[in-house]
Amino acid sequence: MPKLNEHYQDLKESYLFAEIAHRVAAYTQAHPDQKVIRLGIGDVTLPLGSLALAGLHEGVDAMASPDTFKGYGPEQGYAFLRDAISAYYARSGVSVDAGDIFISDGAKSDTGNIAELFDADNVILIPDPVYPVYVDSNVMSGKKVTYISGNAENAFLPMPDPAVHADIIYLCSPNNPTGAVYNREQLQEWVNYALANDAVILFDSAYEAFITDPDLPRSIYAIEGAKRCAIEFCSLSKTAGFTGTRCGYTVVPKELVFTASNGVQMSLHAMWNRRQSTKFNGTSYIVQSGAAAVFTEDGMKQCRANIQYYQENARIIADTLTRKNIRFFGGVHSPYIWFECPNGMESWAFFDELLTRAQVVGTPGAGFGENGKHYFRLTSFGNHENTLEAMKRFEKLF
Ligand SMILES: *Cc1c(COP(=O)(O)O)cnc(C)c1O
Image 1 (tube, helix red, strand yellow):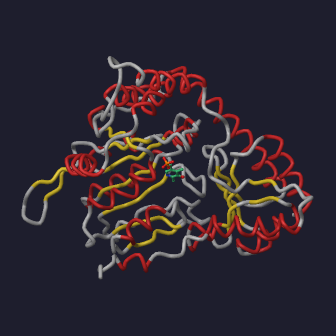
Image 2 (cartoon, helix red, strand yellow):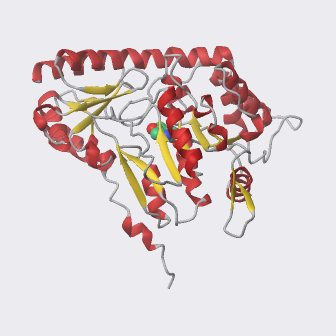
Image 3 (cartoon, rainbow, N blue to C red):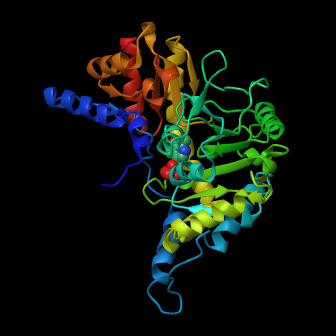
């Protein structure tokens, strides 16, 4: 009989989106004539830009002829895409070596798989609330995590405690689910703390393209010293609508070298390279061809137009909450609006209230951690008409 990885027993039931679907299905069955508006999912809805599509088509056409056909590609990704991403960083004033960039099928795999590089005997800090992948991927490999509290007092931006040592720190900015964004000074404090502790920051920047204020850092590498302590995860999912097309990238600087227990110097870059070369055969050439088009200036212009569409929805939601005097976070440099449930309600009770009385679906904050228990997430990934209608109903109700 196989001995199983029993750490899987330690995972909390991942019932958030299944439970939402279940409650919505039960409601719509009982009320088939009601129009339910979904502002719950963290998935984009606008189609790909024409340049990304042209890039994808070029990739497909290359497969048709023996001179241009592509078989296995480099596990790290094609140089044309790594160069395009390096140039994209450079346009926002951040220098990232193309050789430090690893192309993947998305940030979820990489933020989950990175845990393999680290021993169980580490102090691992993970914000609460946050994207559930970080906690679950550590629990699966039997690692203990320490939560750092995001709350209204710190505007859902937990800061380091110099009195407490850490080895690994997960940060997500702009944050899912709270929409909160670290500024330069705050990220500098985290980088200084990591350097002082010889720690590694795992920085999830999946929403960087939603940042519109040029003073806010879109990359951890905009911060002095970050290449000596940080790995960055990015994705085309929210930036370019690639949630179904699948492409992400992870930056592992060659500067990240630590001393092993036997005194050997180990490079995280070399380890990740080995891990990927062993377990991953690369992102499809076709997708990388589409992705390269995204990172051209015109390709990014098309992405920005879609992001602006979502941001207009976020503004509609934020304006409604402001008028109703409901405290909220995010909604500016993020597709997410995170607010306190009215009347001290818990998030699942509020979910039911919003569904049955306004026919609007959101996401209960409890699904993202203990600190989300009294909070609720709405997303701006719907269309204008539905978002306006949902907010009209919301305004009447609360
Ligand atoms: C959506 C999202 C990602 C992107 O995941 P992909 O696998 O690239 O689609 C990464 N991190 C966070 C926090 C997200 O919300």
